[in-house]
Length: 289
Figure: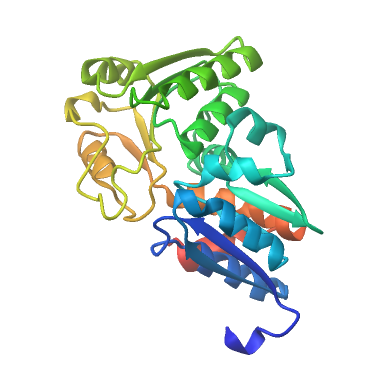
């Protein structure tokens, strides 16, 4: 890697916390090298309150782009010059592109989630999905599923100071896709979660439950909520098999890991940065097999 870094090499990075487990640097750097692009990609552990300083550094260093992960996605919106339509609706960004000092924020998480489903031979159109979480990734999943034709979206989030934001998101989805039934519930209501999962085709975890160092946690406390025919997806990709997916598989569910979502949202961001297609199949074989 060092042999190809020179004075002209452009810098891209991931910010968020924690990021030490991220597979993004390896995925992007391989793709840059494979396509002969003069970029290098690294990761910086940036807490939410440090987001503004990190983005200011992006301007100073004239970085071409930056990916943003939890917990910085909503905070990063404040520092954008422009937002994509989806990022504006969702109120979060996971991809920032620097065009001569103008920073545009995008959200590719939802696209990555839906393409990951398609990669496993399942479609969201006409189906019901229950989503745990109200942060950037969760909201992106909710919005994209509705835009791609989901019949119903049930959202479970903590009833805390940010619960009102989840309600606002649900209203925005209803306005954009009135044919999609959208409901919001308190994630502490285990019985309601079980009830919604029983009538769902898909269940997605987009919380940090299951992510290292919380690998012994699952957002679904009552494993009887799992049922054969339910497709269970996790946005967490480290560890690859979370407690949620392990228990769901034991109950006969079809399970989809978060690595594919990472791959496809990364491919979308890669194109925004470079104007070229990431060598997806090579990256999948090298880093996700």
